[in-house]
Amino acid sequence: MAKQSTRAVALPAIIDLDAIDAIRDQLAEALDEGAVLVDAGGVERVSTNALLLLVSAAETARRNHFDFGIATPSAAMLAAIERLGLGAQFSGMMRQ
Image 1 (spheres, rainbow, N blue to C red):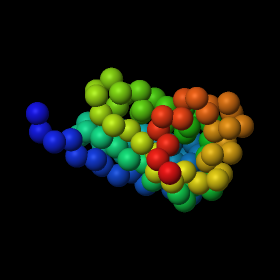
Image 2 (cartoon, rainbow, N blue to C red):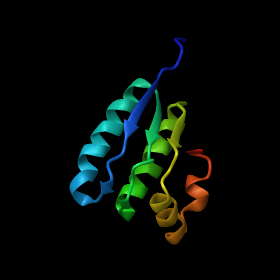
Image 3 (tube, rainbow, N blue to C red):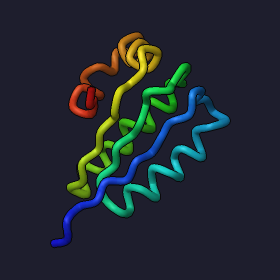
Image 4 (tube, helix red, strand yellow):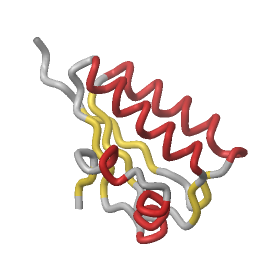
């Protein structure tokens, strides 16, 4: 088996319904190739749907035996995850 390469996907500052389709497409393309590391350091605002999209992408990666991580999540993103009670779903993904 070839060595698994990791694709980086940078999240925009505002992840709302207008941005979610482009992010979904980027994640799907990256997951077709292997492991994914999401850069969430610049996130200022994130919608619930976007967080659920990340959970779904992580599950897709897991089923395909690929690594999926979220690097340096911003304080705003961490607060949204906590506020929505999604800490358990994100705990294995976070890379500080």
